[in-house]
Every structure is written in structure tokens, then in C-alpha cells.
Length: 93
Image (cartoon, rainbow, N blue to C red; front, side):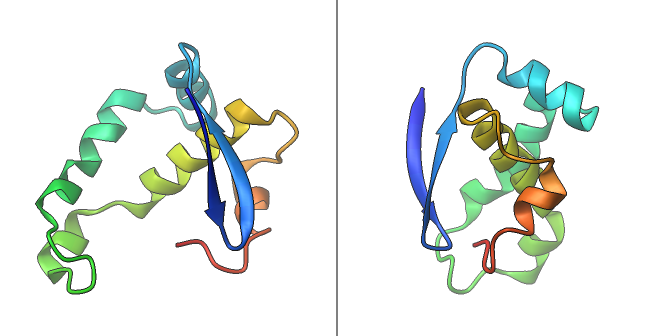
């Protein structure tokens, strides 16, 4: 699956395929599906403008950044390593 999203005014291609979980594990040393499960706390959010502090404590933003990088790297092999890539954005919602 491939999709283009807008991040900081730039179109970023995301792509997933059968190798996505392996690419994630090779880069971050963590199981992709276990990390996805950590995001299940997002299902309980009804209003993203007024997120409860207890939910924020459970949310690991590193997982979001890592997954985002993995999808982008799968779509474009030329992007740099995660930290360098994230530094190219002034805002990363």
C-alpha cells in the first residue's frame, strides 16, 4: 500500500509491504506488531484538542516517529537515518 501525506508543507510518500516489519526490527531492534499495539491507547481519544493527561502518559511518541520513518524509508530509500530525517522538518505533528 502506498499513500502520500503532507508533513510540514511537504508531500511525504509512505509505503508498506511484506518487508515493513522486518525493516522496522532491523532499524530499531523492536517487534513491529508489538510496537503498533502500544498505540492502541489512541482508540480511546474522542477529542484530540483536549487529550487527558493520563492518556498522554501512556503514549510513546517514539513509536510514532519510528513507524513514520519506516513507512517513508520503504517508499524512498534515499531518506537518511531517522534522527537526520526528522531534523529536516521544522514541525512534525
